[in-house]
Length: 238
Ligand code: OAD
View 1: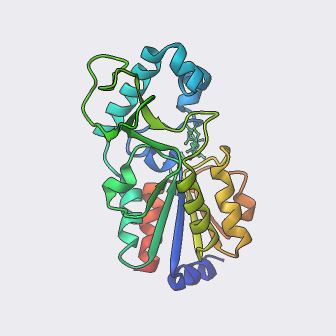
View 2 (view 1 turned 120 degrees about the horizontal axis):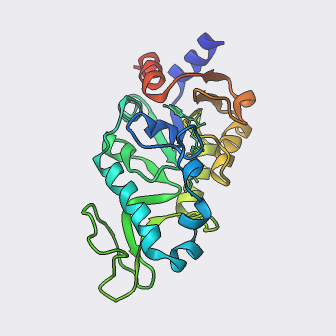
């Protein structure tokens, strides 16, 4: 089995990654649903919905500002770097649910941020949108227009950025190999991307220490961490 998949990986022209919080776990960024997962400690409905934001923007911002500073201090790990390195050998697209920007910082060029970016800040009223890495001293931060600023992330109940989502479907449906890394695949619609790839005949590889609901559809499941497994996979191709 491993030999067969390795051969297909070698021959593949286009490789698409679907990544989730698990790929950044070894960079010191907590996942959402694991042992130390954020949604085990915090109530998503009080911190990650538009209603929660308007009810208590200071509280939501305090939580996001702490996450932002942790993310900005973090570094890409060998998992992110292996994906970026693979671009030297193959056409690579990264469809990520992560908002941390670590794929881009590792050097990946084709990154589709399905759930937005925690580094990008936008106005709730006007068209202001910018990458801001400095710490906000007063929370919630205000736009020049006077309205409240918000992180440019997708909250529960909000739609994905439609242009990014449509591009992601196109990439997922047209890849030779899909590698699903560090996601529990419980959040829709991102969890449909492996289904599009599978339906279109892609070879499916999963990198996750735990089983997921797509594990039985995989051609190969590597029960290992991303920082360990991805550099090893890269050696097959390079
Ligand atoms: P989850 O926390 O749901 O899942 C993380 C997955 O990573 C689990 O399956 C773990 O087994 C796996 N994992 C943990 N450590 C790993 C490691 N070192 N290497 C590889 N895998 C590892 O995170 P996501 O699936 O990304 O959405 O969650 C999806 C969405 O739910 C997030 O984007 C966020 C959250 O609510 C929004 O905020 C809209």
